[in-house]
Image (cartoon, rainbow, N blue to C red; front, side):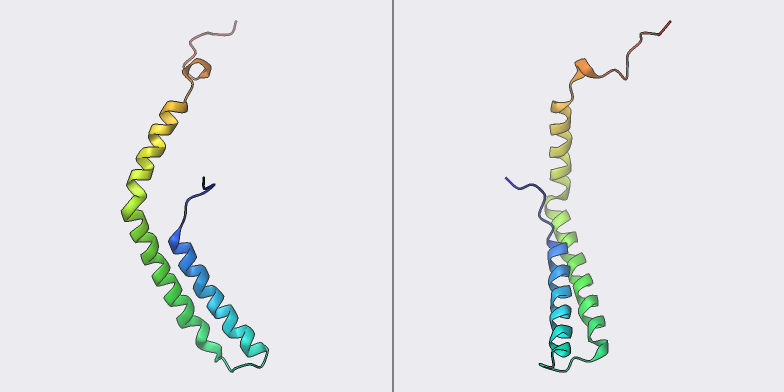
Length: 91
């Protein structure tokens, strides 16, 4: 069982950040020459594609998972230990 939800938008953005890091690491190591402004298009593309992936993911399963979470929380609430509606007064 997964411990957390899968977020494809974060994965896409992370891949673009990794590509930018590899490009500048190769430049620092002398393997190739990366222009200084190359990070901007890479990060912008990563943000745009990551946002699109997150929007598609929310559209596919965002509303249904919220309904499932509400149903689970309704089942797990124990009414016998809930003292928010306790009418007793302390004297």
